[in-house]
Image (cartoon, rainbow, N blue to C red; front, side, top):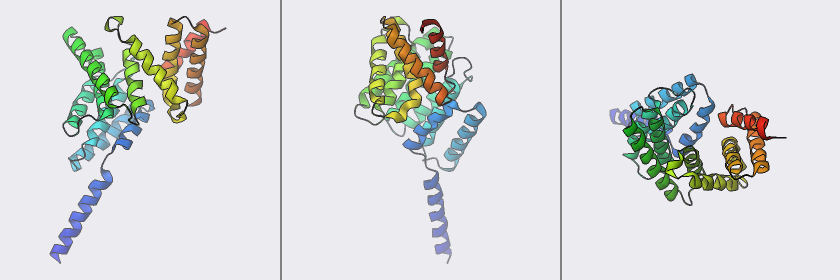
Length: 247
């Protein structure tokens, strides 16, 4: 009887761990938290921290936490202090368990870029930018043929297009956004990401002297931002461009 009870308890424990185990699909879905409140993001972080406490083998929870801290760190106007370092910390913890995961590498690259942004130390700024560049380029290379190739290139494009000209990454960023635009034609489910992409595609066309095309892209950005209620900074920037450049 005791043996049977013990086996039942073991089975129940395994079942609980299995139910709570985090996976790739769940992690990617957390990108929706970029549009949620700070309180909601912290509540979700606490949930994954509890998962790690109860199931230390659930290392995908580290990736989930890294993504959620990205939501707290990414806003340029009000990033949460220390959040960028947490992205790097949890991305590294994930990598100890699983290497060459394109989603984890993407967020590690993002974390490095945000640490660089937040640091006041010139050496740290430069070294972290270089790490971010290496990581993003490797992630894009590995992601060739992967379902998330579009996302890896989307994230790299956002990083590269905002780098100073001395890094000479603008042409790569342009290629990334053109790839995303082409991918979107057959994958309308990524529409939410196109608010941002259309803003930068407009900026690219403005630089090339194609103002009419740029205005068209900015209009698409504004439309998506309003229709999906994203409150995206890029959607607002597109609206500002239209007040100046649209007829």
